[in-house]
Image 1 (cartoon, one colour):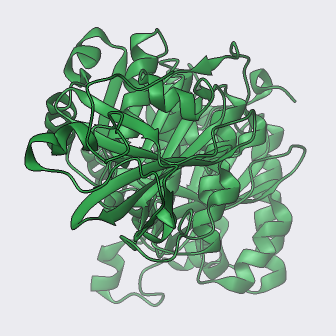
Image 2: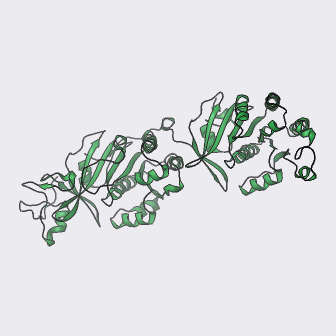
Length: 514
Protein backbone atom coordinates (compact mmCIF):
# COMPACT_ATOMS: atom_id res chain seq x y z
CA UNK A 1 0.00 0.00 0.00
CA UNK A 2 1.42 3.36 -1.02
CA UNK A 3 1.61 6.49 1.13
CA UNK A 4 -1.28 7.92 -0.98
CA UNK A 5 -3.59 5.26 0.49
CA UNK A 6 -2.71 6.21 4.08
CA UNK A 7 -4.13 8.61 6.62
CA UNK A 8 -1.54 11.00 8.01
CA UNK A 9 -1.45 10.95 11.82
CA UNK A 10 -0.48 14.62 12.13
CA UNK A 11 2.96 13.61 13.45
CA UNK A 12 5.42 13.47 10.56
CA UNK A 13 7.90 11.23 12.37
CA UNK A 14 5.18 8.69 13.21
CA UNK A 15 4.02 8.74 9.59
CA UNK A 16 7.59 7.97 8.57
CA UNK A 17 7.66 4.99 10.95
CA UNK A 18 4.37 3.78 9.44
CA UNK A 19 5.58 4.33 5.86
CA UNK A 20 2.97 6.99 5.18
CA UNK A 21 0.44 6.77 7.99
CA UNK A 22 -2.48 4.60 9.12
CA UNK A 23 -4.46 2.29 6.87
CA UNK A 24 -7.96 3.83 6.69
CA UNK A 25 -11.07 2.31 8.26
CA UNK A 26 -9.18 0.22 10.78
CA UNK A 27 -8.69 0.38 14.54
CA UNK A 28 -5.42 1.18 16.30
CA UNK A 29 -4.37 1.15 19.93
CA UNK A 30 -1.93 3.48 21.62
CA UNK A 31 -0.60 2.34 24.98
CA UNK A 32 1.59 3.93 27.62
CA UNK A 33 1.85 5.03 31.21
CA UNK A 34 0.78 8.33 32.65
CA UNK A 35 2.43 11.33 31.03
CA UNK A 36 3.75 9.55 27.95
CA UNK A 37 1.60 11.57 25.53
CA UNK A 38 -1.28 9.28 24.52
CA UNK A 39 -3.95 12.00 24.53
CA UNK A 40 -1.68 14.38 22.61
CA UNK A 41 -1.22 11.77 19.88
CA UNK A 42 -5.01 11.53 19.68
CA UNK A 43 -5.31 15.30 19.32
CA UNK A 44 -2.76 15.29 16.48
CA UNK A 45 -4.74 12.50 14.81
CA UNK A 46 -8.06 14.36 15.02
CA UNK A 47 -6.83 17.85 14.11
CA UNK A 48 -5.02 16.47 11.06
CA UNK A 49 -8.34 15.01 9.96
CA UNK A 50 -9.97 18.42 10.37
CA UNK A 51 -7.24 19.96 8.21
CA UNK A 52 -8.04 17.36 5.52
CA UNK A 53 -11.77 18.21 5.61
CA UNK A 54 -12.82 15.20 7.70
CA UNK A 55 -15.19 14.93 10.66
CA UNK A 56 -13.55 14.13 14.00
CA UNK A 57 -15.03 12.72 17.23
CA UNK A 58 -13.26 12.64 20.63
CA UNK A 59 -14.84 10.17 23.08
CA UNK A 60 -13.67 11.26 26.54
CA UNK A 61 -13.97 8.65 29.29
CA UNK A 62 -11.45 10.19 31.65
CA UNK A 63 -11.15 13.99 31.32
CA UNK A 64 -13.78 16.66 31.11
CA UNK A 65 -13.94 18.07 27.54
CA UNK A 66 -13.50 21.62 28.80
CA UNK A 67 -10.25 20.62 30.47
CA UNK A 68 -9.23 18.77 27.32
CA UNK A 69 -9.90 21.81 25.16
CA UNK A 70 -7.98 24.09 27.51
CA UNK A 71 -4.97 21.76 27.62
CA UNK A 72 -5.07 21.30 23.85
CA UNK A 73 -5.10 25.03 23.21
CA UNK A 74 -2.04 25.37 25.46
CA UNK A 75 -0.24 23.04 23.05
CA UNK A 76 -1.37 24.95 19.98
CA UNK A 77 -4.26 22.71 18.88
CA UNK A 78 -7.42 24.23 17.43
CA UNK A 79 -10.25 22.03 18.73
CA UNK A 80 -13.20 24.15 17.53
CA UNK A 81 -14.14 21.65 14.81
CA UNK A 82 -13.72 18.53 16.97
CA UNK A 83 -16.88 17.00 18.43
CA UNK A 84 -16.43 15.87 22.03
CA UNK A 85 -18.58 13.16 23.63
CA UNK A 86 -18.34 13.52 27.40
CA UNK A 87 -18.46 10.14 29.15
CA UNK A 88 -16.15 11.22 31.96
CA UNK A 89 -17.03 10.59 35.65
CA UNK A 90 -19.55 12.94 37.21
CA UNK A 91 -18.16 14.65 40.32
CA UNK A 92 -21.66 15.64 41.46
CA UNK A 93 -22.66 11.99 41.72
CA UNK A 94 -19.73 11.40 44.06
CA UNK A 95 -20.67 14.34 46.27
CA UNK A 96 -24.31 13.24 46.59
CA UNK A 97 -23.20 9.75 47.61
CA UNK A 98 -25.25 7.75 45.12
CA UNK A 99 -25.05 3.98 45.14
CA UNK A 100 -22.47 3.62 42.38
CA UNK A 101 -20.40 6.60 43.55
CA UNK A 102 -19.11 8.19 40.36
CA UNK A 103 -21.20 6.41 37.72
CA UNK A 104 -25.00 6.15 37.59
CA UNK A 105 -26.39 2.57 37.66
CA UNK A 106 -27.38 2.62 34.02
CA UNK A 107 -23.88 3.81 33.05
CA UNK A 108 -22.32 0.93 34.99
CA UNK A 109 -24.54 -1.50 33.15
CA UNK A 110 -23.28 0.00 29.93
CA UNK A 111 -26.58 0.75 28.19
CA UNK A 112 -26.36 4.54 28.56
CA UNK A 113 -22.78 4.57 27.28
CA UNK A 114 -23.74 2.57 24.20
CA UNK A 115 -26.77 4.76 23.48
CA UNK A 116 -24.77 7.96 23.79
CA UNK A 117 -21.96 6.61 21.58
CA UNK A 118 -24.39 5.58 18.86
CA UNK A 119 -26.18 8.94 19.04
CA UNK A 120 -22.88 10.85 18.72
CA UNK A 121 -21.73 8.74 15.78
CA UNK A 122 -25.08 9.09 14.00
CA UNK A 123 -25.00 12.84 14.55
CA UNK A 124 -21.38 13.57 13.55
CA UNK A 125 -20.72 10.81 10.99
CA UNK A 126 -17.00 10.87 11.94
CA UNK A 127 -14.15 9.93 9.65
CA UNK A 128 -11.80 9.75 12.64
CA UNK A 129 -12.60 8.67 16.18
CA UNK A 130 -10.33 8.85 19.22
CA UNK A 131 -11.47 7.04 22.39
CA UNK A 132 -9.53 8.03 25.52
CA UNK A 133 -9.14 5.58 27.21
CA UNK A 134 -11.05 2.55 25.92
CA UNK A 135 -10.00 0.64 29.04
CA UNK A 136 -12.76 2.43 30.98
CA UNK A 137 -15.25 0.08 29.34
CA UNK A 138 -13.71 -2.71 31.36
CA UNK A 139 -15.04 -1.14 34.55
CA UNK A 140 -18.52 -0.87 33.03
CA UNK A 141 -18.70 -4.55 32.05
CA UNK A 142 -19.71 -7.37 34.41
CA UNK A 143 -16.96 -9.75 33.25
CA UNK A 144 -14.04 -10.16 30.86
CA UNK A 145 -16.08 -11.98 28.23
CA UNK A 146 -18.72 -9.26 28.13
CA UNK A 147 -16.00 -6.58 27.98
CA UNK A 148 -14.32 -8.27 25.03
CA UNK A 149 -17.64 -8.59 23.20
CA UNK A 150 -18.50 -4.93 23.79
CA UNK A 151 -15.13 -3.69 22.57
CA UNK A 152 -15.23 -5.92 19.50
CA UNK A 153 -18.73 -4.75 18.71
CA UNK A 154 -17.84 -1.07 19.15
CA UNK A 155 -14.77 -1.33 16.90
CA UNK A 156 -16.71 -3.19 14.22
CA UNK A 157 -19.58 -0.69 14.38
CA UNK A 158 -17.23 2.28 13.89
CA UNK A 159 -15.11 0.77 11.10
CA UNK A 160 -18.22 -0.40 9.21
CA UNK A 161 -19.25 3.25 9.18
CA UNK A 162 -15.95 4.01 7.39
CA UNK A 163 -14.30 5.55 10.44
CA UNK A 164 -10.64 5.14 11.33
CA UNK A 165 -10.38 4.51 15.07
CA UNK A 166 -7.58 5.29 17.49
CA UNK A 167 -8.04 4.36 21.14
CA UNK A 168 -5.77 4.66 24.15
CA UNK A 169 -5.09 1.99 26.73
CA UNK A 170 -3.49 2.28 30.15
CA UNK A 171 -0.29 0.25 30.12
CA UNK A 172 -0.82 -0.77 33.75
CA UNK A 173 -3.85 -2.93 32.88
CA UNK A 174 -1.82 -5.78 31.42
CA UNK A 175 -4.63 -8.32 31.05
CA UNK A 176 -6.83 -5.75 29.39
CA UNK A 177 -4.00 -4.71 27.09
CA UNK A 178 -3.57 -8.27 25.84
CA UNK A 179 -7.31 -8.44 25.17
CA UNK A 180 -7.23 -5.24 23.14
CA UNK A 181 -4.17 -6.27 21.15
CA UNK A 182 -6.16 -9.06 19.51
CA UNK A 183 -8.92 -6.64 18.51
CA UNK A 184 -6.85 -3.88 16.91
CA UNK A 185 -5.01 -3.67 13.61
CA UNK A 186 -2.02 -1.85 15.08
CA UNK A 187 -0.41 -1.10 18.41
CA UNK A 188 1.76 1.94 19.13
CA UNK A 189 3.53 1.98 22.51
CA UNK A 190 4.72 5.11 24.31
CA UNK A 191 7.16 4.84 27.21
CA UNK A 192 9.48 6.68 29.55
CA UNK A 193 13.08 5.58 28.99
CA UNK A 194 16.49 6.44 30.35
CA UNK A 195 17.08 8.86 27.49
CA UNK A 196 13.57 10.38 27.57
CA UNK A 197 10.25 9.36 26.01
CA UNK A 198 10.11 6.78 23.23
CA UNK A 199 7.55 5.55 20.71
CA UNK A 200 7.53 2.08 19.19
CA UNK A 201 5.17 0.33 16.78
CA UNK A 202 4.55 -3.19 18.04
CA UNK A 203 1.99 -4.31 15.46
CA UNK A 204 0.75 -2.99 12.13
CA UNK A 205 -1.39 -5.31 10.03
CA UNK A 206 -1.03 -5.21 6.29
CA UNK A 207 2.19 -3.21 6.14
CA UNK A 208 5.81 -3.05 7.13
CA UNK A 209 7.09 -0.34 9.46
CA UNK A 210 10.31 0.99 10.98
CA UNK A 211 10.97 -1.20 14.00
CA UNK A 212 12.65 -0.15 17.23
CA UNK A 213 12.11 2.51 19.87
CA UNK A 214 12.25 6.03 18.40
CA UNK A 215 12.64 9.29 20.30
CA UNK A 216 9.46 11.19 21.22
CA UNK A 217 9.52 14.74 22.51
CA UNK A 218 6.64 16.78 23.93
CA UNK A 219 6.96 20.53 23.47
CA UNK A 220 4.75 23.59 23.46
CA UNK A 221 3.56 22.58 19.99
CA UNK A 222 2.59 19.01 20.73
CA UNK A 223 4.61 15.92 19.86
CA UNK A 224 7.66 15.48 17.67
CA UNK A 225 8.93 12.03 16.75
CA UNK A 226 12.54 11.57 15.69
CA UNK A 227 12.92 8.28 13.88
CA UNK A 228 15.84 5.97 14.42
CA UNK A 229 18.16 6.21 11.45
CA UNK A 230 17.70 3.34 9.00
CA UNK A 231 20.50 3.84 6.46
CA UNK A 232 19.35 1.30 3.88
CA UNK A 233 16.05 3.12 3.34
CA UNK A 234 17.93 6.14 1.97
CA UNK A 235 20.15 6.80 -1.01
CA UNK A 236 20.93 9.20 -3.83
CA UNK A 237 23.49 9.60 -6.58
CA UNK A 238 26.14 12.30 -6.39
CA UNK A 239 29.17 12.84 -8.62
CA UNK A 240 32.27 11.00 -7.43
CA UNK A 241 35.61 12.72 -7.06
CA UNK A 242 38.54 13.58 -4.83
CA UNK A 243 38.23 16.41 -2.35
CA UNK A 244 41.32 18.48 -1.63
CA UNK A 245 42.16 19.92 1.77
CA UNK A 246 43.52 23.07 0.19
CA UNK A 247 46.92 22.30 1.74
CA UNK A 248 49.29 20.88 -0.88
CA UNK A 249 51.51 18.87 1.47
CA UNK A 250 48.50 17.38 3.29
CA UNK A 251 46.98 16.34 -0.03
CA UNK A 252 50.33 14.78 -0.91
CA UNK A 253 50.05 12.53 2.15
CA UNK A 254 46.64 11.39 0.88
CA UNK A 255 47.74 11.10 -2.77
CA UNK A 256 45.44 13.91 -3.83
CA UNK A 257 42.93 14.18 -0.98
CA UNK A 258 39.98 12.16 0.32
CA UNK A 259 37.44 10.51 -1.94
CA UNK A 260 33.87 11.78 -1.87
CA UNK A 261 31.16 9.65 -0.23
CA UNK A 262 33.59 8.29 2.35
CA UNK A 263 34.01 8.57 6.11
CA UNK A 264 37.30 9.99 7.41
CA UNK A 265 38.26 9.71 11.07
CA UNK A 266 40.74 12.33 12.27
CA UNK A 267 42.20 11.14 15.57
CA UNK A 268 44.63 12.53 18.10
CA UNK A 269 44.94 13.96 21.61
CA UNK A 270 43.42 17.22 22.77
CA UNK A 271 44.81 20.40 21.19
CA UNK A 272 46.80 18.69 18.48
CA UNK A 273 44.83 20.24 15.59
CA UNK A 274 42.06 17.75 14.73
CA UNK A 275 39.23 20.28 14.48
CA UNK A 276 41.30 22.71 12.45
CA UNK A 277 42.29 19.95 10.03
CA UNK A 278 38.68 18.84 9.58
CA UNK A 279 37.53 22.46 9.20
CA UNK A 280 40.18 23.01 6.53
CA UNK A 281 38.68 20.15 4.49
CA UNK A 282 35.13 21.47 5.04
CA UNK A 283 36.08 25.03 4.09
CA UNK A 284 37.82 23.93 0.91
CA UNK A 285 34.79 21.81 -0.04
CA UNK A 286 32.43 24.73 0.67
CA UNK A 287 34.60 27.11 -1.31
CA UNK A 288 34.53 24.68 -4.22
CA UNK A 289 30.75 24.47 -4.41
CA UNK A 290 29.96 21.56 -2.06
CA UNK A 291 27.71 22.71 0.77
CA UNK A 292 29.25 21.80 4.15
CA UNK A 293 27.94 21.50 7.71
CA UNK A 294 29.94 21.39 10.94
CA UNK A 295 28.35 20.07 14.16
CA UNK A 296 30.08 21.12 17.38
CA UNK A 297 29.58 18.81 20.37
CA UNK A 298 32.60 19.95 22.33
CA UNK A 299 33.00 23.73 22.01
CA UNK A 300 30.90 26.81 21.48
CA UNK A 301 30.23 28.21 18.06
CA UNK A 302 31.83 31.55 18.92
CA UNK A 303 35.06 29.88 20.02
CA UNK A 304 35.11 27.73 16.90
CA UNK A 305 34.57 30.68 14.56
CA UNK A 306 37.16 32.84 16.29
CA UNK A 307 39.74 30.07 16.29
CA UNK A 308 39.14 29.22 12.64
CA UNK A 309 39.39 32.86 11.53
CA UNK A 310 42.61 33.29 13.53
CA UNK A 311 44.29 30.60 11.39
CA UNK A 312 42.99 31.99 8.08
CA UNK A 313 40.04 29.64 7.56
CA UNK A 314 37.23 31.96 6.33
CA UNK A 315 34.32 30.41 8.25
CA UNK A 316 32.33 33.64 8.58
CA UNK A 317 32.60 34.42 4.88
CA UNK A 318 31.49 30.91 3.92
CA UNK A 319 28.58 31.07 6.36
CA UNK A 320 27.46 34.41 4.97
CA UNK A 321 27.47 32.98 1.44
CA UNK A 322 25.34 30.00 2.54
CA UNK A 323 28.02 27.48 1.62
CA UNK A 324 28.75 26.47 5.23
CA UNK A 325 26.61 25.84 8.31
CA UNK A 326 28.08 25.74 11.82
CA UNK A 327 25.77 24.37 14.50
CA UNK A 328 26.46 24.04 18.21
CA UNK A 329 24.98 20.85 19.74
CA UNK A 330 24.33 20.30 23.45
CA UNK A 331 24.74 16.52 23.81
CA UNK A 332 22.91 16.24 27.14
CA UNK A 333 19.77 17.76 25.59
CA UNK A 334 19.55 15.73 22.43
CA UNK A 335 19.21 12.05 21.57
CA UNK A 336 21.01 10.29 18.71
CA UNK A 337 17.67 10.11 16.87
CA UNK A 338 17.16 13.86 17.20
CA UNK A 339 20.68 14.56 15.99
CA UNK A 340 20.33 12.17 13.05
CA UNK A 341 17.16 14.02 12.03
CA UNK A 342 19.06 17.33 12.13
CA UNK A 343 21.70 15.89 9.84
CA UNK A 344 19.04 14.46 7.55
CA UNK A 345 17.40 17.86 7.16
CA UNK A 346 20.73 19.42 6.27
CA UNK A 347 21.47 16.68 3.72
CA UNK A 348 18.02 16.12 2.23
CA UNK A 349 16.54 19.62 2.36
CA UNK A 350 19.65 21.80 2.00
CA UNK A 351 21.74 19.42 -0.13
CA UNK A 352 24.80 19.31 2.14
CA UNK A 353 27.59 17.21 0.65
CA UNK A 354 30.21 17.48 3.40
CA UNK A 355 29.58 16.92 7.13
CA UNK A 356 31.93 17.25 10.11
CA UNK A 357 31.09 15.71 13.51
CA UNK A 358 33.22 17.31 16.23
CA UNK A 359 33.59 15.10 18.05
CA UNK A 360 32.90 11.51 19.01
CA UNK A 361 33.53 12.11 22.73
CA UNK A 362 30.76 14.71 22.88
CA UNK A 363 28.46 12.60 20.71
CA UNK A 364 28.90 9.75 23.20
CA UNK A 365 27.24 11.93 25.87
CA UNK A 366 24.05 12.14 23.80
CA UNK A 367 23.89 8.34 23.81
CA UNK A 368 24.48 8.18 27.56
CA UNK A 369 26.22 4.90 27.00
CA UNK A 370 29.43 3.31 25.86
CA UNK A 371 30.77 0.51 23.71
CA UNK A 372 28.44 -1.27 21.30
CA UNK A 373 25.70 1.38 21.43
CA UNK A 374 28.12 4.10 20.37
CA UNK A 375 29.42 1.93 17.53
CA UNK A 376 25.88 1.13 16.33
CA UNK A 377 24.82 4.79 16.24
CA UNK A 378 27.99 5.96 14.48
CA UNK A 379 27.80 3.05 12.04
CA UNK A 380 24.23 4.00 11.09
CA UNK A 381 25.11 7.69 10.72
CA UNK A 382 28.22 7.00 8.65
CA UNK A 383 26.44 4.49 6.42
CA UNK A 384 23.56 6.90 5.84
CA UNK A 385 25.91 9.73 4.87
CA UNK A 386 27.81 7.54 2.42
CA UNK A 387 24.59 6.25 0.82
CA UNK A 388 23.49 9.86 0.39
CA UNK A 389 26.76 10.70 -1.36
CA UNK A 390 28.01 12.83 1.54
CA UNK A 391 31.65 13.03 2.56
CA UNK A 392 31.95 12.85 6.35
CA UNK A 393 34.69 13.60 8.86
CA UNK A 394 34.43 12.28 12.43
CA UNK A 395 36.82 13.74 14.99
CA UNK A 396 38.06 11.26 17.60
CA UNK A 397 39.82 12.45 20.73
CA UNK A 398 42.62 10.27 22.14
CA UNK A 399 43.30 10.24 25.87
CA UNK A 400 47.07 9.81 25.79
CA UNK A 401 49.29 12.67 24.73
CA UNK A 402 52.26 10.34 24.21
CA UNK A 403 52.94 6.68 24.87
CA UNK A 404 51.61 3.57 23.13
CA UNK A 405 49.95 4.46 19.84
CA UNK A 406 46.22 3.77 19.46
CA UNK A 407 44.72 4.82 16.12
CA UNK A 408 41.21 5.49 17.53
CA UNK A 409 39.25 5.22 20.74
CA UNK A 410 36.53 2.60 21.33
CA UNK A 411 37.58 0.45 18.34
CA UNK A 412 36.21 2.94 15.84
CA UNK A 413 38.80 2.34 13.14
CA UNK A 414 36.56 -0.04 11.18
CA UNK A 415 34.11 2.82 10.58
CA UNK A 416 36.74 4.82 8.71
CA UNK A 417 37.40 4.64 4.99
CA UNK A 418 40.27 7.04 5.71
CA UNK A 419 42.14 7.31 8.98
CA UNK A 420 44.22 10.45 9.48
CA UNK A 421 46.05 10.75 12.79
CA UNK A 422 47.86 13.56 14.57
CA UNK A 423 50.49 12.92 17.21
CA UNK A 424 52.50 14.89 19.75
CA UNK A 425 56.21 14.18 20.03
CA UNK A 426 58.91 15.55 22.29
CA UNK A 427 62.09 16.77 20.64
CA UNK A 428 64.93 18.59 22.36
CA UNK A 429 62.68 19.81 25.15
CA UNK A 430 59.97 21.05 22.79
CA UNK A 431 56.53 19.65 22.09
CA UNK A 432 56.15 19.08 18.34
CA UNK A 433 53.38 17.54 16.24
CA UNK A 434 53.32 14.94 13.50
CA UNK A 435 50.67 13.85 11.02
CA UNK A 436 50.21 10.61 9.12
CA UNK A 437 47.74 8.42 7.26
CA UNK A 438 47.04 4.94 8.60
CA UNK A 439 44.34 3.84 6.20
CA UNK A 440 42.73 4.77 2.89
CA UNK A 441 40.31 2.23 1.46
CA UNK A 442 39.76 3.89 -1.89
CA UNK A 443 43.36 4.53 -2.91
CA UNK A 444 46.99 4.68 -2.03
CA UNK A 445 48.62 7.07 0.42
CA UNK A 446 52.03 8.19 1.60
CA UNK A 447 53.36 5.96 4.38
CA UNK A 448 55.59 8.54 6.00
CA UNK A 449 55.03 10.87 8.93
CA UNK A 450 55.35 14.60 8.45
CA UNK A 451 55.76 17.43 10.90
CA UNK A 452 52.54 19.36 11.46
CA UNK A 453 51.97 22.92 12.63
CA UNK A 454 49.14 25.46 12.75
CA UNK A 455 50.13 29.09 12.33
CA UNK A 456 48.34 32.38 11.70
CA UNK A 457 48.27 31.73 7.97
CA UNK A 458 46.89 28.20 8.30
CA UNK A 459 48.06 24.60 8.40
CA UNK A 460 51.64 23.74 7.51
CA UNK A 461 52.81 20.22 6.82
CA UNK A 462 56.55 19.68 6.68
CA UNK A 463 58.88 17.18 5.08
CA UNK A 464 58.68 13.43 5.88
CA UNK A 465 60.33 12.63 9.23
CA UNK A 466 62.68 10.11 7.66
CA UNK A 467 65.44 10.76 10.19
CA UNK A 468 63.42 9.66 13.19
CA UNK A 469 62.58 6.31 14.72
CA UNK A 470 59.75 5.68 17.18
CA UNK A 471 57.72 8.80 16.37
CA UNK A 472 54.48 7.02 17.31
CA UNK A 473 55.72 6.53 20.87
CA UNK A 474 55.95 10.30 21.29
CA UNK A 475 59.65 10.12 22.23
CA UNK A 476 61.47 9.48 18.96
CA UNK A 477 65.11 8.56 18.52
CA UNK A 478 67.26 10.50 16.08
CA UNK A 479 69.02 8.87 13.16
CA UNK A 480 72.07 10.06 11.25
CA UNK A 481 70.13 12.56 9.13
CA UNK A 482 67.31 14.08 11.17
CA UNK A 483 64.79 16.36 9.50
CA UNK A 484 64.95 18.70 12.46
CA UNK A 485 67.33 18.83 15.37
CA UNK A 486 68.51 21.31 18.00
CA UNK A 487 67.66 24.83 16.86
CA UNK A 488 68.89 28.23 17.85
CA UNK A 489 66.27 30.85 18.66
CA UNK A 490 66.52 32.63 15.33
CA UNK A 491 65.84 29.50 13.31
CA UNK A 492 63.27 27.70 15.48
CA UNK A 493 60.24 28.92 13.57
CA UNK A 494 61.68 28.00 10.19
CA UNK A 495 62.62 24.52 11.35
CA UNK A 496 59.26 23.86 12.96
CA UNK A 497 57.52 25.03 9.80
CA UNK A 498 59.08 22.12 7.93
CA UNK A 499 61.76 23.96 5.94
CA UNK A 500 64.66 21.97 4.50
CA UNK A 501 67.62 21.36 6.81
CA UNK A 502 71.27 20.98 6.02
CA UNK A 503 73.26 18.07 7.58
CA UNK A 504 74.11 20.21 10.58
CA UNK A 505 70.43 20.51 11.46
CA UNK A 506 70.10 24.26 10.65
CA UNK A 507 67.15 25.40 8.56
CA UNK A 508 67.73 26.76 5.06
CA UNK A 509 65.59 29.15 3.06
CA UNK A 510 64.81 26.67 0.30
CA UNK A 511 61.23 25.54 -0.33
CA UNK A 512 60.21 21.95 0.42
CA UNK A 513 60.89 19.74 -2.59
CA UNK A 514 57.96 18.41 -4.64
